[in-house]
Length: 444
Length: 144
Image (cartoon, rainbow over all chains, first blue to last red; front, side, top):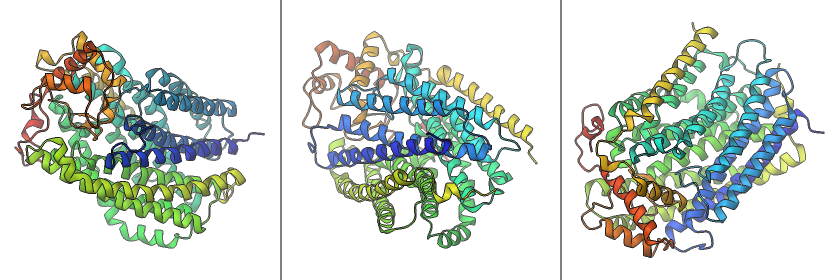
């Protein structure tokens, strides 16, 4: 019999499978940069969208699965409709398979990220509407003030729909009449869409922290809401820092510059609190969940620092259109989002540190450091040579090649670490479902 | 200090500003100065072909896209390239880029799309005309 706690693990399991497959295609894609012609049966034009769509599916499946799992506990009532949650899962799986089949047949959406034939966006939107309805009907029953993570989840749920609709406006000729509009609207939608899934993921981090410590005060604090307001403002208005070179109206890009620079406040706060963060990380290092939460803090610091630097237009002149952008994207989705979601997965499934988990954790994070640094190196060379010389593309890429080789080698280590962690997570979820110590140890 | 009611006002106030910004983004803020940058029917077909063949997996416009191949923003006006060069590569491919099996008409449509891209602005920006606020001169104008 399906219970409220059973639904979340279905999503988590599917997410882990998507992560592993997405990582595999990522390894293939990385080696196709280094050794042209490798795995020709899956050309780069297919391996890239396969990688991107599957890893984004992991983020959404793990985040949504966490929401379905935690929400009844947080609202104090059962999920409004178990059937709708099951239906959402079926739609997600069916659409995911259709996306993979479309790629294999050479049918693409042709947008830069998370793309597929537009008609497949209809079931995705429909499934999300079911999720949104279920979420808001359930959370409406909660008594008392909302902790910040409910505000974050609500924002993520609502804004996914808004930004996803906007990402498909290009299908109408009025929104696709020139390249400036085409790129600007695309990045407005994608930038805010990323912010939407970050709201779900970071909200999940706060829930896991609260549930694992029993301390409900942080999620109701003024600081938490100020940080949420900062993040929300950046979601709404910061997206144009992705497209400084595109000649849209200057106020749009300068507004994004100003909004983006407000996140120095977050970095300053992290620096101010680093001793307490480090002590807490060391005290709780025997908990697999807290290891991943601590790792995510470290990656937030590194990627936020990088993001703030490349959001300064004078620096962005060199870094835009280079692998430094990839370093930021992958450092965030792997180092931050995946770490938080693994923390949630192991909290729900009751994961403890064993040899496999330890190897997986260190291989993942150690490889990711090398991976990240090689991308920054590749981007630095590409950016410097592009801006300061007249060298054509191919000679520049020859000079970048050693960094790409390092990145591809590190990718194998990263994939191996993710494999160990995925194996451990699947084992736990299949044997214990959502009955892990974390889920069972509810604090009043 | 901020009660639930205040939070809702701030939240929906920001959403209201977002809606206003969105309307401007979809319209006047992304209008182009050069009429050649507007897509005609051929360029629209070319844009669709660019999506159908997932060219963005390898190529970029204004630095956005994949990094397997070069940026195409100004390929039709670059000194050692041009429209005929682009058309030749589209039809025959290169060592790393496969021949896509396009017809001459489809190649012409893609070239029309690339010409419109070239007319929209210049990339990369090579002159470092920096300001004290961390910006550069071209960021303060929509005329590149």
